[in-house]
Length: 116
Figure 1: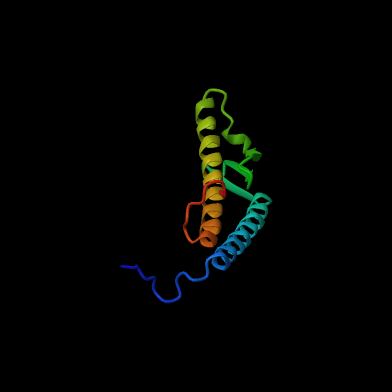
Figure 2 (figure 1 turned 90 degrees about the vertical axis):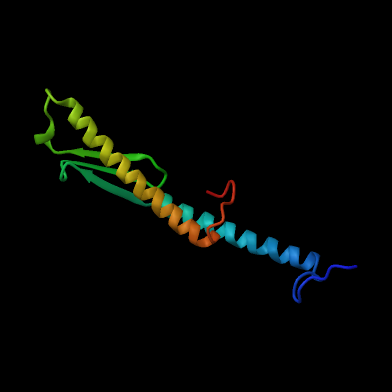
């Protein structure tokens, strides 16, 4: 007994494979374009009510750290370190979330190894 494919499935063989490859290439090109756009963006986050402000790039690199002078307490360096850490982590989370959102929309939520 032969198995039958639903109408519209199969029968195209190489043509369907070529069309799928073209679609994948277009999707990859679009993802590369969006990745380049996101890498050019800056993301800023603050902590301590604005006492510390950190800006990171879409490449996940710290660009600037601004510290208000009144939070620099030589007797409490640990608190300053915590404020910087919190601001850096929040800025990195924002950059990663936007990248995941934009690239996920293109890929339809598929996890494609090596794409992002």
